[in-house]
Length: 465
Image (cartoon, rainbow, N blue to C red; front, side, top):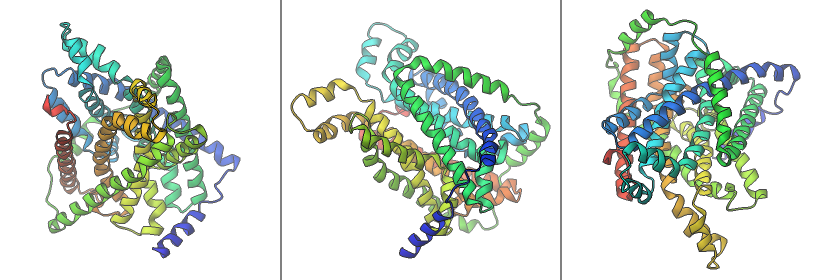
């Protein structure tokens, strides 16, 4: 352990000092703008489609269960793999990255928005229903206002997530910061990689600050919508390679059993170890950090630096964390657990603190008026009121990490992800399709576990509609 810690310190020293030369900073302007364009366009479309789909599900209209299952199925496909599919269709360029992230985050936002709508307080909804309002009216004037703060918080978080995903798919499809970061790490140019990471942290911090004001002034969303629409127009595809794409997709529709099928159980166990281990590590660390970062729980001089720490941890994509930590943990599942855990601490910490800040003020003030201490108000006021959204976010993160465990296979972290990546690199499309089906099955099983957990804890889920 001591030797691993010494290796970590030695590796981190290679990143300092970062490359702050004016020439390199000017060079990064274009990749930053490309990444923001992709993220803005994809988020714009994903929010529109995801919100419409989730409202349809929340209104309990016909086919809601099937639609919800479809969202879960699409989310089971890693965003990196979707980017490759989109490159086959649209060619290299920002449009491929935009399409891949739009598909993925429409499913992601639609699913989590639907979960938030279904887990909303039923009393106001039932009161509105008693007036004779239709299901659509109930969704628009009941569910939407009840969950508006959580929707804004999660939407802002997902914009950060799209920025991070754009850095990953950019290495495959669209350039931007992704190409520069992964290229710098691959070439062992650590000072430049450190500069890119710092830029990512700065962008995430800026988005977090803007989101803070947007939650209090929702009219500012108009500006986001305009930027997203403009970015979408700029990133429209120049051409579509339909015949080539159909031929390639046809090969993917014929999965082939790998010759070394006996390795599959071990690969699945490694993937589960990475996903569950990373999520558990994140839960244990994110809860206390989120309480320290919540502005309504602790003073600014404490919450401000903790929020910056969370931003740093989630600004670095899982894949980049893995490449940074290879010297400490080596190859295999350990590095996957650490990479997913470190990134998920920042992500869950952000969502947890937003849930704590979004709790209704009346019950908390009533408890504080009894003379209860700040700790008692937090333990018996804020936490119980925030446990619903926090549970939804945690279960969603487990699903996310199950999928991310396949992406982290790119750096030889083991599991199904490494087998999928190896097949992808060798153009063994049949085996690639087989491992994609295995990944899809793991995500579906995880989603089923989430349903059982929600039922056990009394948290509503879409499947019970």
